[in-house]
Length: 415
Image (cartoon, rainbow, N blue to C red; front, side, top):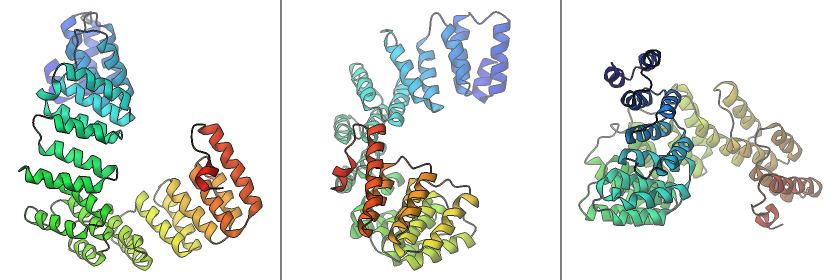
């Protein structure tokens, strides 16, 4: 019965079984307890798994591993790391490769580089990096996403075997941290070593081309992709191609690709709209946005961020206010700091500084220093010394109360 529940991932049946075991007085049976932990983790009953785990006098290594993995899977990374610390106190217990991968994911979610370094040091002693390629790849990913790209490179260099996943993870890390040139050199090095790229590798490399404006390189990569995939087969790859061409200023090519797609999601539309917005072609931005709505594609946070920014650049206050209201009223989208900043920028451009301040004070982003900086910029442009002084004092107050360690706003602004 235990095996059947675990195989079918039947949570209700697993909980009934747990209750039955307790009712029969079998909850003190060591084998049943340890297996029950694994079963409850597998069906997503993490709190029940923890209760059973806490009662086990002689905890099996598999129970530690299962529970740590379970906490990571259900988005409780700190619980996973805390449990790992407890596990380390018992020198006879060691995490499996599967669990270490989960632990690195937990570190990534929390951006906890210090804990990641500790786990890395611990697994180095038992040679787990050499034994399990997935551990090495997850370690590269953790370092890259925690900002330690040099450490990610070091780990990559020490791997006994490099597969397409480890190459792609490192390339993606460099792209994420603004090192697009390094990413493209790695992409070339990967091919020289005879490792064929997969779709994810191409996506990372195209992003690097877009960030650099390297149109020629992007064209070569596109040509390589065309020998492996047809247009419309891999929508994420198609969207990345559109985005790359748009960022490189080849808007006609981006438009042509877009028009050929048989399947378009909101990302497809956003990529094209953002390209036109980036190159100041606001007329195209609004036309394509309306076309997206007519086609029944619901806009998302990114769509409205692009539209509001375009409104701000063109000084279209009434239209921006319409879109700002529509996004929450008609689409249930809660405006973020980016949306509010575009509105404040526009109000500042047209000289309605008091309205900008009122809007900020009514919004949930009123404690963000960045948005007050926009008001200060507008005060400087319009020569509004009185409001500028009040805004400056308020901003300094926010910094001193919310983030004493941060740079003072007057240093950033050169005031």
